[in-house]
Length: 113
Image 1: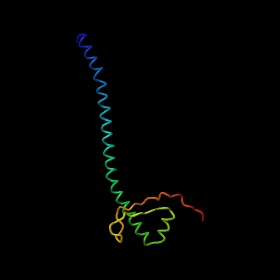
Image 2 (image 1 turned 30 degrees about the vertical axis):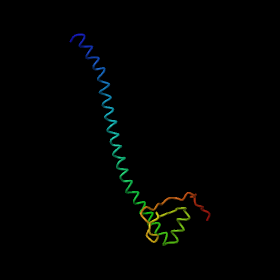
Image 3 (image 1 turned 180 degrees about the vertical axis):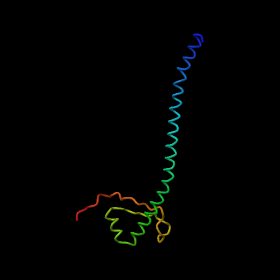
Image 4 (image 1 turned 120 degrees about the vertical axis):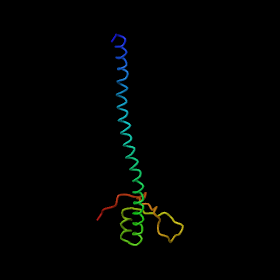
């Protein structure tokens, strides 16, 4: 091996080694980001299932509060406002788009007993 070959080989190793290490690092970053993306996609898909379950629960609580004055009193005491989505027929049952959310005036309940 002559002197020119030695320096060409040395400089090429100096240039290629950081590129190789960068490739390893970036492949690990891409793999980890792919795992996070799959996890977030799974969470987003499960979120729609939970949203429909919360809507069903709100509808059932609303229906129960229409029949049970004690439940209605508890909900009023805790400042829980259940508002069913208006339907075309006023006598129809509340839709599945009911919301279960605290009213804007919600404060901590008084515990003076």
